[in-house]
Length: 126
Image (cartoon, rainbow, N blue to C red; front, side, top):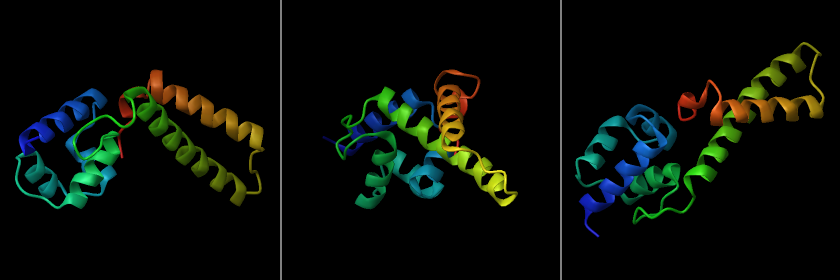
């Protein structure tokens, strides 16, 4: 496989996930200049390719490791847990922390919003 073929596969997956270059850079912890060099088929470190492909659920050859649906569900859960933890942390500081059942409901509701609700376009925002 050529470098251009790999870049095309990764570009295709990026479009399928509707993830911007800026958010891909933030989520993969790769600088924008490096990301632009990669997509221009310039040489980058293997660790850079690994960071990019991991975020997109691909292997080094651009093959799918995690299906789109599972990858989206994983990301939705991560974001839901993160957002719920903000609420829980603030509430706990005020001695008003939520019970586990309430937290689980919040996480589930947020997951659904990220997958199919009004926030589905914000799933990959870093």
